[in-house]
Amino acid sequence: MAFSKNGKSTIVVVGGGVGGLALLNSLSTIINPKKHTVVLIDARPVYIHLISSLRLVVSNTDDLITRSVHPYGDHTFQNKLVGNGKFIKASVTAVKFGDPGNCGQVILDNGEVVAYDILVLTTGSTLPHPIAFPTGSTKAVEEYVKTRQAEFAAATDILLVGGGPIGIELSGELRDVFPSTAITIIHRAPLLLNAVYPDKFRVAIQKQLEDRGITILTGDTITSSDSLDVLSNPVPKGEFITEQGKTLMPDLVIPTWGMRPNTAYLPSDLLSPTSHVKILPTFQLPTHPNVFVIGDIVDCDERKSASRAAFSHAPKVAKSVVLYLDLLEARRNASFPDAKLDITDLLASKQSAKYKKSIETMMVSNGKDSGMCYFDILWGIMVGGWLSSLLNSKDLMVSRLSPFTGYTPS
Ligand SMILES: Cc1cc2nc3c(=O)[nH]c(=O)nc-3n(C[C@H](O)[C@H](O)[C@H](O)COP(=O)(O)OP(=O)(O)OC[C@H]3O[C@@H](n4cnc5c(N)ncnc54)[C@H](O)[C@@H]3O)c2cc1C
Image: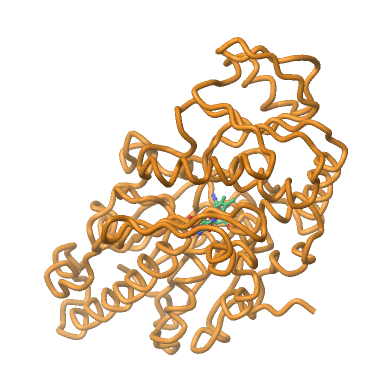
């Protein structure tokens, strides 16, 4: 591993979403600013709070375009990172890994090449149609939001294809704002969501939505050729005959499927069959111990969530990064200047650096005043209605964003 001329090591973080910002915030209290600098790279100029993004694209409720879309800047680097952090707006298109444990480079779509001593990848998931925000500029994001809002406002009969969390939450947001619009969810499985969750939870959500006049068609779907059509044009030309033979005549069709790990810039030998990044229990790449991975792209048998990325993955990785650099420095000072850190050093030195899965939780909003939460403890605890609204749906954590992003909207 090589250190830059000023003796500082460079930690490059790719992805300034939940995992990336949580990592910066954790590092900002434990890092030694005399020894390390941090570079954050994100394809967008703004952090978009995904948890409230479906409310954002439906209407101007709560001025979310101002309150839940926060620009990156100097404020992104807090506490000890002040003056020691730099933001670059660009997409990473490839990583040139060094020899195991040695520094490498990330290649950006603007032609820049950024060298790292430590690399942290947290590039999240590709997003489905209604929230596939552009990367270009803040204005482009605002235009995208306005277009979606106008599309929803003009529709009288909306078909949501897919009854996962996105289809469910979008239907609730739409019902809040458009009480007389016909809304249908069509879902291939016999119950909403997937079999990770107990049937009682899936049934309870369906009942909640139906009580709000949302039609749920389970065990059915549109044909694969119609699916391809609606991906390119959500305003359909005519009727749909579902696989079960039902005729639907929506004037807006929203595909809600298509979340996949954002890992196309990585070589396939680092990825699992589902395109997640294979990691050690310390979140390191098995072949490159100075590269760490956080969030949705991690290959780990758990539901991907903001809470996991922020509260479980990021603080652990922040500590491991600092530990890794300290161990490396100790080696260098012990007159092995070219010593590489063996992967096992980190694993062996701190048992606590290993990750243990946290409990499974799921919070699904149904507009502002309702929703369901599930906690996989004891016999499986479910809460719904007003309590779920209080815990999650009412605010979708928007009022807690500023300390997280370092930005206060004016
Ligand atoms: C509609 C919706 C609602 C959700 N609700 C909840 C909820 O209520 N509770 C919960 O816990 N979780 C929720 N989640 C899940 C949660 O948002 C994700 O699990 C979390 O954001 C993952 O964090 P991340 O850091 O891995 O990725 P992200 O937060 O998605 O951040 C990834 C970042 O990487 C950037 N990026 C991607 N590719 C590149 C590249 N090649 N170069 C540079 N930058 C790149 C992106 O621009 C983005 O800023 C929800 C997700 C969605 C879509």
